[in-house]
Image (cartoon, rainbow, N blue to C red):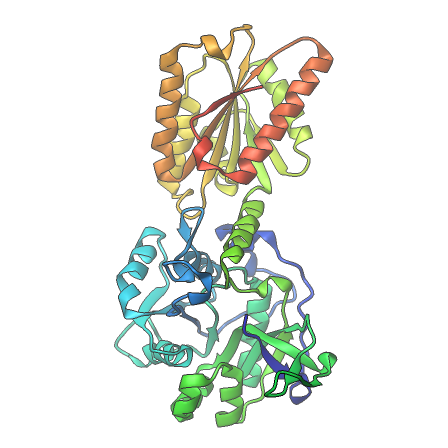
Length: 443
């Protein structure tokens, strides 16, 4: 991975970013957090984003550029776009793509309902693509891209960017003219001779790795690109350096969290998927039927799911719409033989609210068997209907799993069964394995 190393003695660092990753940052509901946050100055000026996404992703070793690789049936770049779109104080996101990927990007915008995006064609190098993105704001006749006061430049393959950091970058850019995220160096940087021997090493404490996002007064970075040379366009890698060299603007550097890494290699996709899955599995809603046994099982299951934030509600009717909208994991408890009306009502709510558009919703349908009837003796048409239902709702990004638990009055045996139910439920929620949908597992 290419790392731009900055000598921090040339700059003044007055911000630090010590907060760890907020797992909720990838969820759209976090947009609500920015309005009344204590201690944060309001952003009362226009802010826009430029996402260069014209790279070919050669190091990924995959046929498609890395920004278009999918995680949970959704392209990586869509996660990055949403990290900005969820913030009400960001007005426009200009995505710069290669000409051959223009239609693909438009399809992504439409499919995932990205409302702030304007897609433009990039150039042959990263700097040319960034300049193309900046030039999109020069078209005064295009109401989709009004000229911003501050523009944030970010990588399309860095989906985990926190609102706190973006706010610091934006306010620092407005005050100073330029700002950028940095991270401590993990390894010592050395220089080698032409023969391949050690020449010298740098004092690691004096240097930092330059990361994204970076923020600029729009007039500063646009003027810098207008003045830069062909050599800069072809081989340059640091936007902050252009602002310093051509506009005399020293950037304020802000230490960012470890999550600023970019997806560069194939293994990074697996890491990004793990982060997203872990984020989505932090809460669950248990929906219990009216039967006493179902209510008691719901309470026990809630206690066992101590690693998740859980709520128990009696049913999934309209009065509980708030619960249906704030999580993406549902455990629906009912007695064996009950119909799927409650599940269908939930799915209908998700369709009406577009709740499953961006992230898959998991429904674990737990059937409590009180009759000693084996799952193997259930009518074939009931199991077939369950599989058909699962295959239908998965088209709407809803993953439906089934578990049957045998009730017993033997305390030790019942305790083991509920513990096993908990383990399976947690695994289904965390793994989100589409191949297991429509299966009726037995505890």
